[in-house]
Image (cartoon, rainbow, N blue to C red; front, side, top):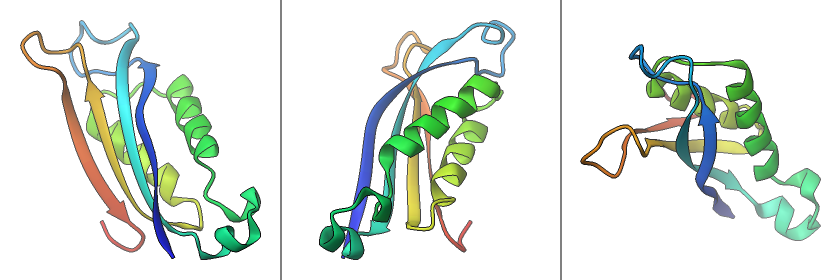
Length: 120
């Protein structure tokens, strides 16, 4: 049985940006993550150990940004996708990163990437 684990608008305070005025200060980014997985075992066992635990993914992403300050959101989105795909039950991931306060006349600037196991 296929399913998609979703995390929407995960709020992260990170040091990210290519421009000098962005570096050295934290800014808010929002992250949406969709992870495709097979839940056939989990619906029978009802055991978290058989599941793709979204809290583990969120904790790993928060840890990444506590130790890394990428210049580009493309780099950050790719790193998040790779973290998600490391889980053996993850088959495909879609990551949308949004910088909500970067453009005065737009809701956000961002990037959406998709990766799957064995596909770039």
